[in-house]
Length: 182
Image 1 (tube, rainbow, N blue to C red):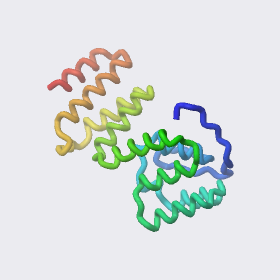
Image 2 (cartoon, helix red, strand yellow):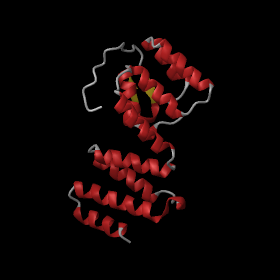
Image 3 (cartoon, helix red, strand yellow):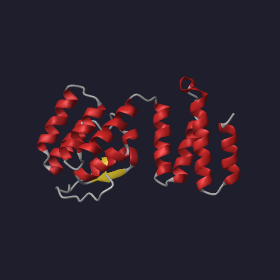
Image 4 (cartoon, rainbow, N blue to C red):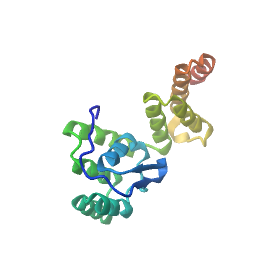
């Protein structure tokens, strides 16, 4: 996934709107990119007939659309739905698909708050430091989930400290690290 992906298949005349991130996509490659890079956002809002209709009508991906409709009928998991799209796109190598499946499996077993931290961690890793800070703060200032334990929140404070450090906000970073170690 670190290589260049050329969009060589059909481009849609009408975009598919992913409301959750306010993004319009026009190709199967863009859809796959969204799915792979936003696994923590995937939920039943992407797994629907509307997507199947768009794939069929706009991209002429009739076989893929048929497979996805079958998965909808069977009440298949989101992971199966996503992996079917990725495999049928023929963009990714077997190793890349295996890595994506591993991340997907990891997220499947996580609580919502853990997924939120995963999202923040990915934002920080990708250089979206301010967005990561906002996500970490939402976790810390939101409703506490006692089932994840205090260690989880300590890690969130530590990550928030790292994010502040990247912005050279050393006093704030020190406060977060001090809170994390308590």
